[in-house]
Amino acid sequence: MEQKKGLIQKWFGRKNGRGSAKSVNYMSAKEIRQISRENRRITDEFERVRNRENVPESEYTAVMKDPGNILEIEDLNTWFFTDIGTVKAVDGVTFSVPRGKTVGVVGESGCGKSVTALSIMQLVQRPQGQVVKGELRFATDDLTIDLVRIPTEKMQKIRGNEISMIFQEPMTSLNPVFKVGMQIDEVIALHNEGMKSEEVKARTIEMIKLVGIANAEGVYDMYPHELSGGMRQRAMIAMALACTPKLIIADEPTTALDVTIQAQIMDLLRQLKERINSSIMLITHDLGVIAEMADYVVVMYAGRIVEQGTAAEVFHHPSHPYTVGLMASRPSRIRSAEQLYSIPGSVPNPIDMPNYCYFRDRCNRAFEACNGDYPPTFSISGTHSAACYHYSAVSEVGK
Ligand SMILES: Nc1ncnc2c1ncn2[C@@H]1O[C@H](COP(=O)(O)OP(=O)(O)O)[C@@H](O)[C@H]1O
Ligand code: SF4
Ligand SMILES: [Mg+2]
Image (cartoon, rainbow, N blue to C red; front, side, top):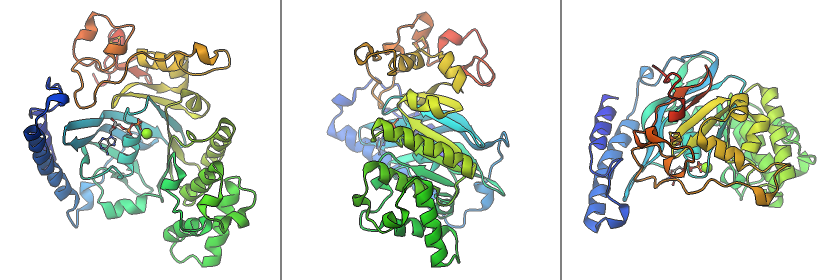
């Protein structure tokens, strides 16, 4: 831990860290080589810490701040050490997923939603991608563990068993060369040692039926390519939920599907969640999807949370100008496609983030205070907060 802290301090001190005025367009080959060498040194050190054997349990156990939560994300920083500089894909993210609730995570493409999810699953692309700071506290039945520090082989037991992830593209989970039924069997058998093969198959068929596939026995013997997109997504959900996980992370689960199938899959997720009594972290760039499902909403922009609150707070009183923009760009029955608003400008270069509010250059409410440092998070109510100087009259979170 101490070692890691030392590394980060060194990193903050380095020339091409945040706030560097140097444009990535003007880097010489020598500079790129230098960065690449330094990156290797830093990531090797993270890997060395990660690959230690016999890590004592005390290093990766934690205490939940609120026992009502299944997951608490605190100051998560996940960075990619690339040859042209560091991408702070997730930069100090803090939020919780309460038991039995759905938390929607929303934001434009590239704002760090998937990297947050992959950090929870320990699936960030290593060695260049590393969780450099923060805690991911997850409550298992008997103990709370820190998913950042739990050794990889122990994480394998959590993944798919206690936490499952549903991806946008089902083929990232389904293997094209094996029959669908066999793949679900494998997951069930892996997590239920000693279960007889007939029992496993019966459970698989039950799962296939549960996700709304009519011809379950037939689909059991099919290859993924023989199914339609919607059916494949259902098969992947069956596989993800086969072990009744406590937390389901759904990363844009319906983006590739047409609207009718989207609604069906969302209904299905909602029903299954109730049935197995789990919690959902639902990631999407589409506020419409979240409106139907979420109890709480987290809005991300350029690797940071800019607003969070209950769904009612965020939908009825969107506070951060970025959230207001997202709401206005949402299609609705009363707005035709031509009237759709789109937030002007684009997200700043992730390697060279400004030292003021990341949204300022696109913000239509910017005022003098916005020329200062990146705004702290201000609390609007007990559950609602926004990182915007317009709320500086209310109290700063944590102060
Ligand atoms: N393997 C990687 N190497 C370098 N940068 C990455 C990698 N994966 C993601 N990123 C960067 O991290 C940022 C966040 O990405 P992501 O979490 O995938 O966004 P989204 O909100 O669309 O899911 C983006 O700037 C992306 O380019
Ligand atoms: S802090 Fe200023 S620039 Fe940033 S979102 Fe708020 S008003 Fe806009
Ligand atoms: Mg994504």
